[in-house]
Length: 260
Image (tube, rainbow, N blue to C red; front, side):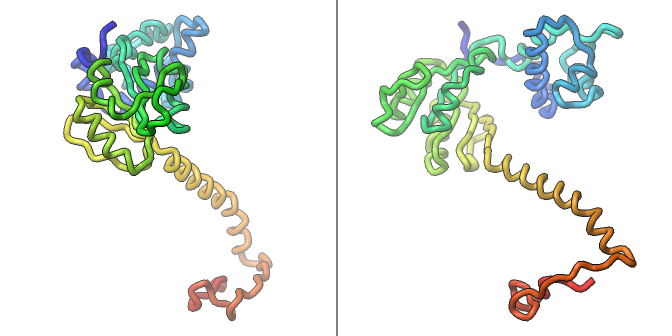
């Protein structure tokens, strides 16, 4: 089977906008679900809803693939699966190494979706000598001393970093020096890489913080009508207890409750 080190996606993919590339996996996931249910065709509206985008954007994205569908029929599901898989480079084998086999690294190693999506976990690597040889997801953990030879011998294309933040940059430097040009980083730090190396960062804490922002905003919007009603003339004001420290705020010079 061919490896990703010697095969790259079609050069015409370079003309596809990055935003479109980022949506192709969403379309592929939705199409794969349809294919598994033996659905032969799908309309742009149905597929867009399943992927979480609007239909006009979907049709524009597919125009970059040269796929326009058939009026009154829609898109052929199996053909679209093939088109998108080919464009993403998923019609070939992409060997992957995971560096850092703690809780997160072990969870990634046990993820069953890699193989069905064109990725093969070639090796699991950890710096802890006590981990060497221990089986995780059916593979023996290898020591980081072997990193370069593992990459060379397996034709590895993609490196996954799941180490603590303090070790991530050193691991990244070794991956790049060994010829890796695509890195998926789960470590909570920003990696410095040379031109020509692509890094995708996955930071779960940042995603949770973004969700917290939206939760706070929604809570503010829900309390807005009540606050507006209280501000209308003739609406009795709710009494507020004076703040400790003579009615001053935490800084000691600003009232904790501003007068209406």
